[in-house]
Image (cartoon, rainbow, N blue to C red):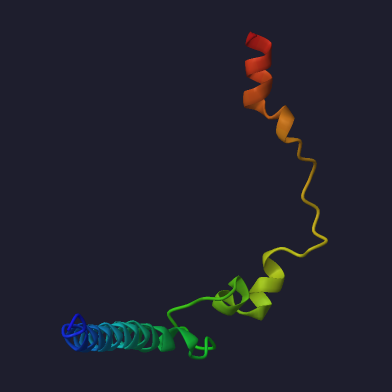
Length: 94
């Protein structure tokens, strides 16, 4: 006689488990659908200037302009970040 309530508990567990699983699948499908719908426009070809994503400076300005922008072997001059005018002035005041 002590097991009279167990079928009800098992049935309620199955109902709540199914409801939880269904809601989880629904939320997951909603999230994935949102990501797919709003993510695919970013994957289109970036050859035109209508793309939402610019992957490199070369894509935006073109190969010729990119080569003219700054060559890897271009002289950049001596740079010493520890001897900037601001830091030298501060050192003189101290």
